[in-house]
Length: 430
Image (cartoon, rainbow, N blue to C red; front, side):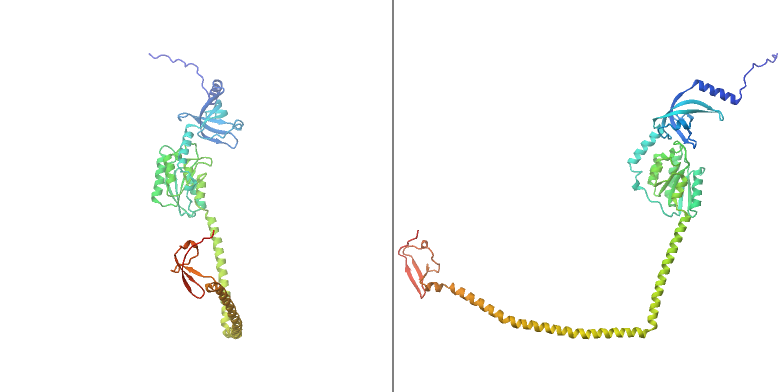
């Protein structure tokens, strides 16, 4: 037996705006002012001065959208960045146009670097100590590359920016793409494989490693230790253009050149074609001027030579006159030199004639003086004055009574002869 229909109890049907407003009122009543701690992710500052970011827990399991309006942001004493651990004080609110829960921060203070950022700093310090970021090991980029390699995702805007910039600036450069994902768990291995492939093929002059901007989590593949070491060890120079100008990854530090954006990486990788053409045109003009100057100078020399050849008799006449002048000078110089030499010889002969007698006289006088001195020292002249020369019979001179003994035979040499004598007695003077 079917029961008769009973009317449903009266129920409230909410409109979307009314329900969201009621939930917002409930949140404000339940959570008036709260303090929450987490890591900053995806921080941006709008042109209006408002700041928008997300706050996540250390494990990355929960994420909450946050906003800090210009007045509160202007009171910050530091520059917030992705991966930074902060404490926010504010209120929960419901952004009704999208029905999203958000936290409106009225104050922010640093609570630490955040787990991800701490990991970044530790690895950075380790690799820096090993010298991977040393400026001295970085290589110069090729000035005029023929081929450039690009390692990035084919689905990202970074590749479009790089190709557009190179097509505009350097259309003569050939581009070879080594596709790889740039975000997610599989990205580091894929990027390493792309970099290894480029080095094995050795078909490009330089490599551009790039991707668009994002949060620290989005860019984390470019902080992978294996990839950073591969970038530093690459045989091909690497230009790294990851994220925006404020984004820094370890690959940026290990690369041979860091570019603030992918577009800037393309601009740094190859010189602008128009600038090269202008420089070549300038060099060509300078070369043309130098060649013309050389040709003009050669033409002038040729004209002068032609004029001389056109009148050979005149040139021969000049040479004859020159030879005649030289012969005249030689005829004048030679007799003069002979006359001077003859005069010099005569003067020397006269000096010799005057000097020789004087020299002989001087030698004679010296000889006479030496003869007189020798005669004064002659022993015979001493003996003639009454002295005698005593010796012991063997020719040894006796000069002291200590050499004599009574009964000893001695020989006395006088001026006119010698006598044998015997010593009777010695008397030594006191």
